Length: 112
Image (cartoon, rainbow, N blue to C red; front, side, top):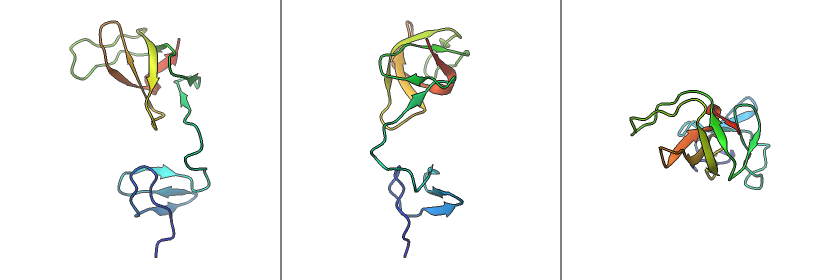
């Protein structure tokens, strides 16, 4: 019936090809069928393309509103000892001096 692989993100079998990519209509995930699955290490990069590792310090590049807090993160705020989110190359976890338990997108961060 459908000889295409299931979506690696949500596991559904409704994938379809679009050019060189496979697309899952259920979750919107797009991936290349020629890419190795599972064995590759996730690489997290900041806005300048620098590789981020757990324990690095990053700097916020623009003012950000924080959900659940009345205190915004100002440009130049340093987030120390970041943690990488498993399976997600777009987010990191960390704490600022005033706000704890932040999850930030790496497109708003640069390595300190």
